[in-house]
Length: 408
Image (tube, rainbow, N blue to C red; front, side, top):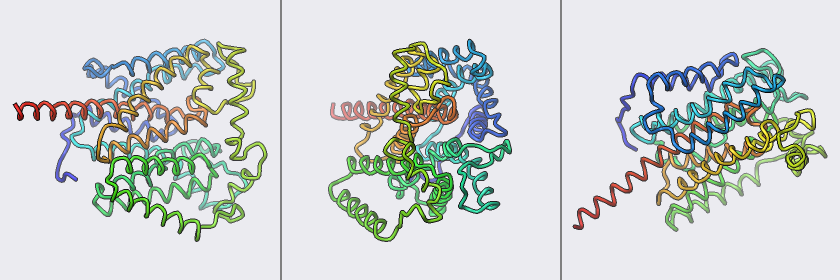
């Protein structure tokens, strides 16, 4: 790890970080105001004109603009969301490009991204810990009172804030040697343990699945980029950990720790085999796209619990097509990121794990209408990915040029 290196950030970049953190915190559910302020800040300093508006930003802007138009034409959807949907995703994407460009070394970007994800989870952590303190861990209802509004909020919505925290085991697997300070390591472990307790209280199978899948991705990422000797040691460690877990950890849903899962595990409509009842909605949504290509009413059968299918419900085939363009462009960048280095790098791995977490969430939740901040944080992360790729590819080209010049 490089020590004693500082980032001499511009004043507007520091302001951008403050607005971004407040946006993720969503104080009193008015976080979108800070999204607007970020947009104004970017335009005021003309940062969008300095080579930051690329093809991916264009596809995102087209999609979000078309999607927002359906909110403008249908008052029942909530016309107050028009500007939020139209501009904030692209604003966050460009913000990610700026921040990755301004930061001098990878560990700064790592901690900034982690901190944003942690702040995003704070309202949920505080809400759940207050609920546990007042009512105990075991409750019949999974929903908790939101600290900002004082109203009961669904467990599914509260759980969305923990998505990035669920990547911590994978991050520790990739960066234990890079994150050298013990205090930083224990902080990451502490955040994960608290987040896991909160997720168990909510009975969120999605978040548990995210944690498991990101560990698997981290293992494959590391295996591909290590020597055979290192891989043998890693496989042995994983085997030992799994063996200990199977031998000593009881996954009995009758226990207090897993009480929130008991009724869901035994449910015919919400069991894991049906993805919590989502598979039936996916089938209905696909059929509905052919019947009503311009979109259909939420009253038909509720949310589709899938980013792309819910987009088709609200914005029709055109919005879905534009979202697919953005999805394909993002997927290509993530694949390039995976293929980039011969040796595992912490920021590279973090971006891959975060993107994995985002996409898995997108497949099973109503993102734009229920998890919009999560989607915009994905756009922010893709901004980091874009500039990171540009930096690393340019660095590789410079090294190749230097080698050619030396040999000449």
